[in-house]
Image (cartoon, rainbow, N blue to C red; front, side, top):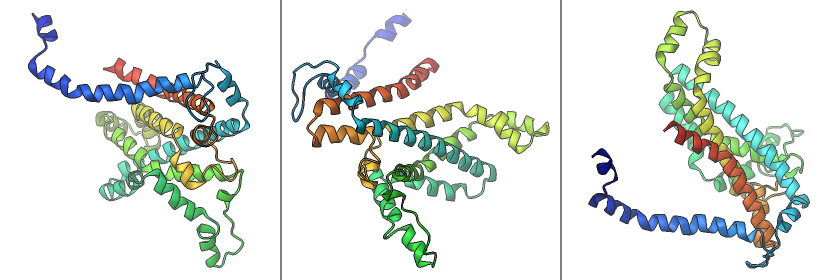
Length: 294
């Protein structure tokens, strides 16, 4: 009888499925169908417009032989490692400070979280002005009398990528803080009180008891920051436009450049598929754990 009730479809079920049907169809057409189409294009000789001449792995071979792609991968590695590690450490530190002091929680939390409400385009533009040696930080410090001060990373080929790291960290650290703060508030207080009664100090309390219980928060932070690093296009364009030269080229800017300005759609599609694979590596284990836990 229970099985019969489980599989019985009521009128409300039919209504709900009918309402959701257009959304499901549009999702499959404009998300999954275009993903499949992009994968197919990556194996064709498409240039300005899609073509259906099958060339196998040629586009992928050309992409990995391209010096700009090597620059993009190197910059992506530098950006991802620094962006995720520093944002995580700073976010955790701010969360512990707020959780520990209990002072100014309602005041500081919106301030730290505010940059996340700003788009990456606005963030990139603001940091572009701030880091410009002619009108930004360097000029301000010169006006204070320190005329030997120099901070021209945004104009320097070997340091420009770090300006993107700085802007991205500023954008997401507050958001990371709120995720860790939620994790800290969910830690079992009985365990903490027992440790305090046994004479456990603050350093050992956090490093041995509290932080090891923040595994789900760390996983969520790594997944969110990881996928944001993969699709970091608008921040790069607004801040450096990929320059100076190709110094801040990323896989996302490489994909746009070769697809829409260099008329190499096949190679651009190959880079898009590569980014999709990276995204799958990040997101699939996370989804699998969620399904497993549920």
